[in-house]
Length: 143
Image 1 (cartoon, rainbow, N blue to C red):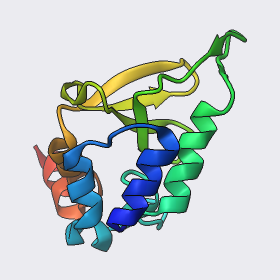
Image 2: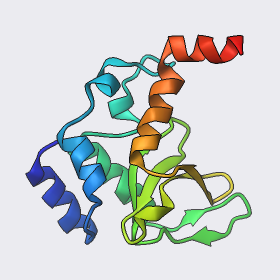
Image 3: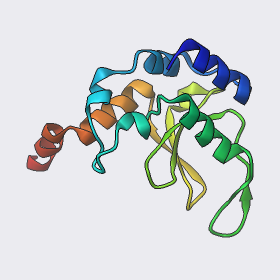
Image 4: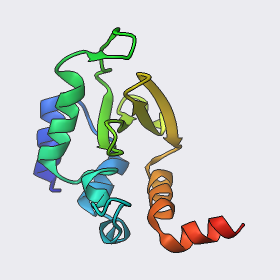
């Protein structure tokens, strides 16, 4: 991702994106680029997206129309919530640009609920690396 891509996102969404997120996508961690998810796809295509078109699409999906929950109730996406990726099951990873201290959240589309996944982006990256690193997983299973 480039600085001009970030400027397009900020202008289109009307938000100032967090500096830590900008740093990650401008200098995408090699470790994240080298690992594949359990489905063979890249982490860069899902958990922490580094493609302008895909980020615009994800953020448009949640903003353009109300989200309907399983109780048939409409839910409007908060303007300050910026989708940084997804889990492959229609749930979104996001940060609150107005309150980055909330950390990285996961929006559960079935419950229309937000859950904290990590205290910050660095911790989220560590969680991803541990999740998809076979040695870390085998070490956890042995404990």
